[in-house]
Length: 66
Image 1 (cartoon, rainbow, N blue to C red):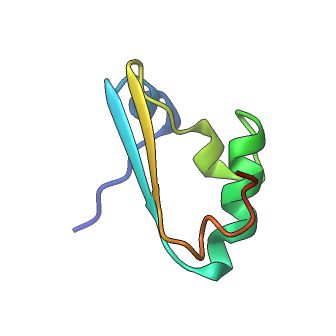
Image 2 (image 1 turned 90 degrees about the horizontal axis):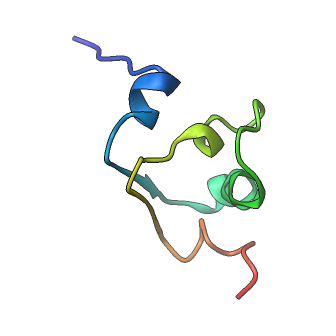
């Protein structure tokens, strides 16, 4: 079984949490967090109406400035 959620459905959620791990995701994380609604990075569209939380391991966060 597979469940697919569209961007409008995700954006209607009160809270959206993204869990990302690994060095191979670092560039995508950095780019997605630079701006919203970037078609090249679908995660940039994911945001909740009240909360959006990114849970990253050290490798996925390695390209973010502190």
